[in-house]
Length: 296
Ligand SMILES: [Zn+2]
Image (cartoon, rainbow, N blue to C red; front, side, top):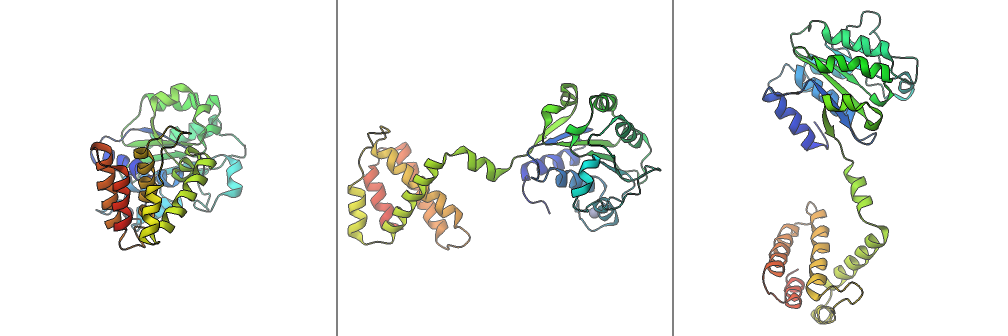
């Protein structure tokens, strides 16, 4: 089950199903948002034995999860081993390099590890499926190691896939970039936080609190509120723009409550209609707001 990054996942799944999967990917985005998890899901998808891929329950899926799958190699820097969550808790990879992870004792991922990864990809697949290598924190690859990887990126062979996972793609060579298919990951919550300044958020919250009070108030209060809406000289917003803003704030509020408020869907439908009318017809903003208050 994939939580979040639905678009990225759908894209990868579709590419695989259509036989269009790239040989090399660059998964980039902030750290700790699930890039590595999705990369591992992809390896499961490629090798799952069930019709409903990835099932997460067949032997291959379970072995990938445990880092025991013979056609899967996970590479990371030594520094990471201390705080690794145990997903790949075993370390049987060396010296036979058949599976599992390659640990380095350095803070960087050097040319030796890159070579091992390439050797691994060039071996024949055990299960005649995909051979997969994930390099986590790929920004830790030395320049030498990156140059070494370029070779395989230029001449990919058969059913192989190399996934570089990084939060600092700018530390990779541009040649690596141009040979990988880049999948960008976004921390949705973070984006919402930074796109509005705190002042705006505070103002919106105050407006919402006031609106909720009016909605549960008396008819007289509702009419008084509507009557008092004036053009805002500070932002040169007309009544229409102010009413639209009010409706958008309520829309956002009801969308959030759609699971807990049975009438939210009905309210949202009304809001959609009114917003449409205000945007595309000459409907009176005050009248639209009165209708809204009476119906909610
Ligand atoms: Zn499976």
